[in-house]
Image (cartoon, rainbow, N blue to C red; front, side, top):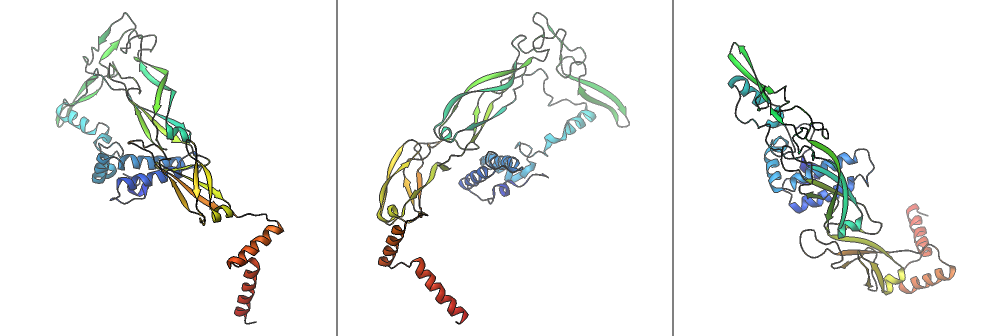
Length: 373
């Protein structure tokens, strides 16, 4: 389909990529283009494109259809360009030459309500541990006064005399090919098949009203940025007795000043002094729930990672928790007294390490060798 990029290229993975590779690529890109983090003008569009690609490729059935049809799959709901895009082309052609007939939906049949989407922003730890809260959403609901039929209480709803309840009018034309019958939406009832003589004063005859509805939602522990949760039956109200749609919560998670998340694992970085790294020490490390002791062995090098097992994020679908990975970075002092400098020079001399003065001496010898002095 013109205008859409290949979903595999969007995520930067091959067509043979595993589910884990697709998930990892999505998380990396979602974090990169999240509108709360990336303030570039096109960040939100890229974030939505990445999310759409992941929604398809992470679902085995959708991915199989996409691999076969690409964006042209008329049943996948992400491409368009299929039979549904003709806007009545095939239906009108059959109606024109054969008088229409099969496949027409009953205008008075119950109709399911539309789904709704609500974006919720969570604090870092709220996503980790979950939360319960109330949200208020605007939605269309069945009118309580007329119970959805659009008529003023005490009055009746008549069957349309023009279309006889079908919601369609037949217009006949004589052509060189013969008599052609074309079906159109009934102009008298607007396709409803019913005529309301006295409209309901609450909904003005529509059968539905807009309301602000408070809903209690439960966010499970372990959700991540970009996760979607379905709240069944909390979408817009159905029409003519049809069931309501669903509410989809799209979750956006704020970043944390100290912790970073990768899947179910938590990463953090802590500073060490030269003495702590060289001699060893026991330090306190903040975790998501408490402070724990971490033993630093003598001779630890900067950039070393230590693992705190089970101190990560609760697994959303399963048991247990991820781990916390602690990276230590040795901090070099920037302000030393003369006494401290002398002690370090003495230490360097005893360990055979070269000092700044020795480095300068070596540099001078290299300079002379290159210049031939």
